[in-house]
Image (cartoon, rainbow, N blue to C red; front, side):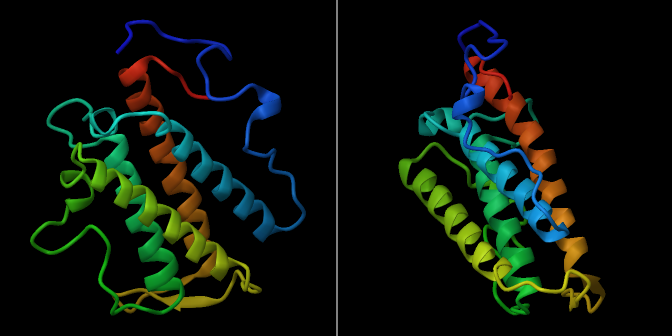
Length: 186
């Protein structure tokens, strides 16, 4: 870490006029949810920009295994689980970065290896693209889908959960990034 904390727009990712995230004020519930989801996805990506594999794999406070790289892998797995397995009904598809023998593979496998970093970014982006293609066809947020345990849940509930999941982990990413180079959230 640089030992210096950056505040204001100095040291942040983008001046307000250059920020790739948009103000969320579209019309309609689905457009609003998608706007927030898109912004949080962009935020996580921004937190991981311009870092070495070692920095991305830097862990937070022991005994936690949380790292920015682990968060990328985790969110790829979350996107895959909710959008592909649950919402698209592919319950038999194997989860990403998880097994019964290694339930924390998303974080435990987040090591400072360029191939692991490339895989994490590629997989995360692929899962987002697949989810967005599916979202393009959504017409009924109240439609019910089956969870792996047979429980029924609405599309709306899953989408709101995805926004919540990203929001929580973007907060973690803020702290992790600040520990690495002093850059603070925006």
